[in-house]
Image (spheres, rainbow, N blue to C red):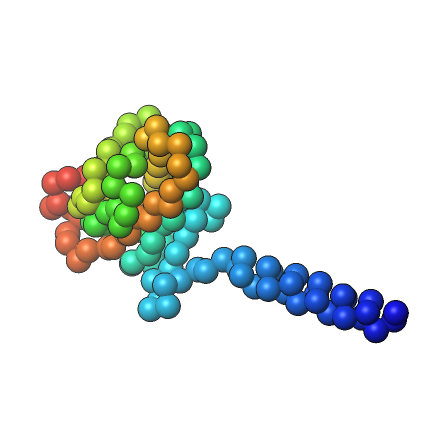
Length: 148
């Protein structure tokens, strides 16, 4: 009877270990591109990264991002990688302004500003994962026209 308890304990331990390791958060794509979720505090992110939303219901899911350390800004390419029917927009909480992103956009974002990036499942009841790609471009922020 003691051997049976030991075998059950081993089986339970193995099952728990499998669950633990399969639930591990993946934080990069394998090629060095960082993956953030809305649970992360994002300050001065890398030049290229992904932002992942797990949209379950028709409520707004958001994350705040502050770019850069200097007083200038950068031009970013921001685009949906999937779930194109979801709504996605940028808000500047300091003045309640919004900037809607359809699929892919080039936009100048100022450093030291808290931007809020918001996604919504757009009335779909089925859960969806939305992935947004951010890529800093080598364009002059001061002469770029499309700023937010």
